[in-house]
Image (cartoon, rainbow, N blue to C red; front, side, top):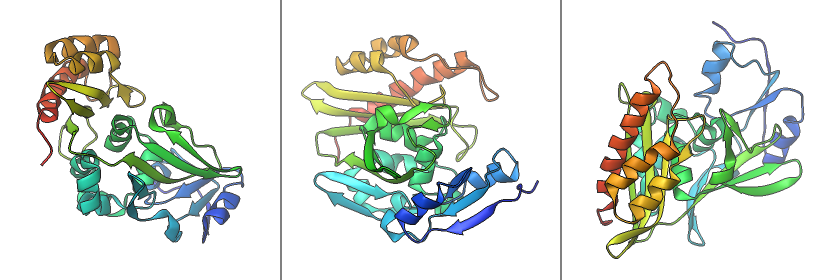
Length: 280
């Protein structure tokens, strides 16, 4: 199919992009790896596409005040190959090779993936596990939303119709930080049937600040808080049992909820082993 007719405008600045989004039924165009597909299937039919690809301020990866900042227009492949991401946000580095295929990672953007908020996508879960902050600019100025409050419902976020996601910020990892990542997909690069992104801080024989963020098992990435508490006490078996209190996966075309629930436990055991490994 071909998309429905739409107008196109190229924003030269962030302020201009926000102004253009004031028009009725306007949408941001960044990497377009999700948007173009929905346009072609006529699942989306905006009146105006606002292209933000020439706003240089929305790119780049840098370490600032103990946080790694990744600009919204940073391509997946840039983050995948970045020594800064590998050093300061190793969880994101682990997740990157699982996002789509090389052609998708060459064009897809960090901000686009987070803003689209597909519940089976890797990056939203990573941000939830990392306790990330999302920077947003809109008609009333700039604001920051923590990841725990950003993902609202299926494809619904804290972004307003005239807002532009400008960057994500994650605390820079230290030698005490542990991360783990695993997913099940029918083929590498497909959306996950179930996946888990996790962080913790080594504290003697136990963990502290455990954050388990599942994806593919709900309408948003899901924190498994009961399992987090059990894992912090060093009891992996109890953490797996506790998942029934945290997750209620729906049936979908890939698997039943019961299968997803079983996979969640398998993933937790695998990721728990990763969390026990000290950072190099």
